[in-house]
Length: 487
Image 1 (cartoon, rainbow, N blue to C red):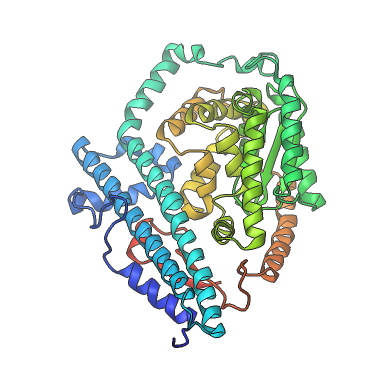
Image 2: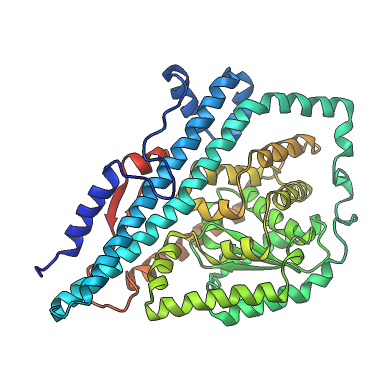
């Protein structure tokens, strides 16, 4: 067997796989979309779908797309997503076939030790690349198209919604909406017996820490004290009836989650992504609202906690021993899709659109009550959807789905809230915290460079290859011209 250069082989493989028109997997399209509006409509509509939600709320009433044009674009998006997912499923399938071939080659009696090492390295590499392709097909692409479809709905439906909202304000019927009594925040009861959730939350936190899989807590005093100070300012302006315990996790993931009983966790990546204090306040009040509405206690039984801890322990075991799932999981974590916050939100808390819409409304009310611009949370949501890129924000959107109706209800609630003379948007303390955070991020980056680039049983392999694309480019880029870079 001739000596095989892993890096050259992988580069060649990616060129062959990603630039050819491949047969789709699992029933997906194998050709580009066949339907789209005429060019005179398609191109400006594509541009509009790349705009932020905030911009679209302003301009949608002035746009003049017909229902048939909208429907053709919707069909195009469905076909484009199906094609894009199919391409990366094909890529994942080809990497798996390469793994299978190399595993078969290992069984030959004539394999030398040098050849065995080369085969081991190739197996590790292709397992990792398969995992990356899986993450892109199962997470990044659906998230991106979910946003596109929601914006398409906004363009089509918002003008009528806006007319309805203005009418309800004019006739006063908006005062009869759910939780309209915002002047009584702190004295009303959204859900009874919040204190009954404290023990559940305490046990969950204990179990997660004992599992060894909770990301480490941030030790930068300036950042931690600022976050806790902000939380203490917000809590009295909510309907919380339990003490609030906020923990900052030193993880690059853009996410936050709440456990029953008042336990909130913010990950470093989310704090990095916030551009002002109102955005961060909106995220905190949103998560507080999950506690107030007792969303977690509905599913967070002892059995559910034990189940997820067991699954996470299994993942840890294969990562540490370099098992098959370990390689894939390691890279998935590197991408930020399967982090702790995502697992907790989806599996334990049973996050769904109804829960998120409740937390959106209550969170905006609490931010407003504390004197902040109530649109902060929506602006943060909007930015992650539009500017931060689908890869970086995929974890956030898998636990906070970008449904059109959520955006509309949030915009509706902002219009219903009494107007503030000078809502707070930013502060000197926030800016000082962001400066301190730069040191934390720099240290984390240095530490990550020191760690092994590939965890696996075979040592001495070339640095692995990583499928990437520019996160702020249109989603079509990932299928039309995927990039590849070395770690």
